[in-house]
Length: 150
Image (cartoon, rainbow, N blue to C red; front, side, top):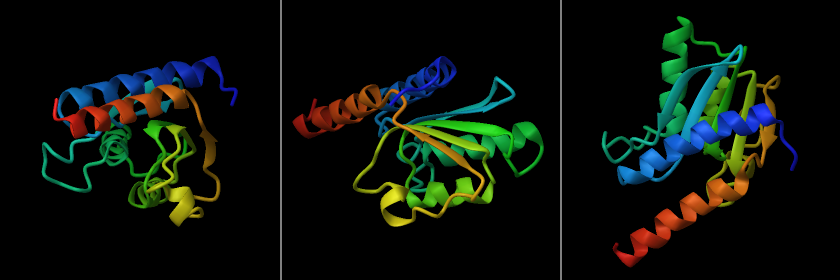
């Protein structure tokens, strides 16, 4: 999949968030929200730290972006996330009327495209597979390390 230099640049920021999540013992998913070429929110999974199953990177980033903009709709924003959103996150993305979603790795077990492919707002543009190999590797290495107990 071809992607623009801009998409790759912002996805690298999301990957940095995912790496921070892994360092903190969280599943390595990172997210960045961009408005008019500027990062307005960054986040990573916080489900372990907050003992909250809803504290996914996307949920944290959407909340931070809405706060930064002073409104709940993200129609002029792009969300970059390292892993395909789950159904819960896709629902939040839909409700926020996000303008564009760019994600890295597909999530065949829990991704929204499998369970709720129409959860996003109809006008949300989707670009999948940006730096997918890097995103996939990060998740695989995290679980490999977790299974080995190191």
